[in-house]
Image (tube, rainbow, N blue to C red; front, side, top):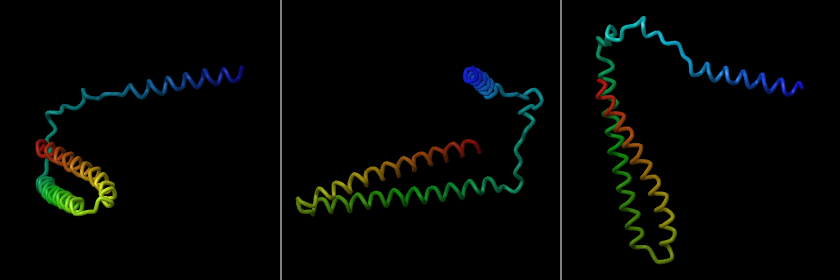
Length: 121
């Protein structure tokens, strides 16, 4: 009897908790979004955005350059390696490919974020 009562109470509390997560008060009537204007008299936000964009571009160029150089080095090692050593180089190649994919994906995602940030400005 006691165990059944606890299950019912916990179920009711869980339902109330879930309903309270979905219901949020909205006070949109009190604030007109057209009256809000951003102000940055010193221009710090724009300067920070251009500095961040320049840093991002340099990091992207360095990352892509390192990836291409590593690919060239790996290809030269593979071509000049003995048949017994090629299996070991293939293991390194799979690690390189995963790393390169992560690098290019991160670089692309950061480029997309930078594009969105420039459009917001």
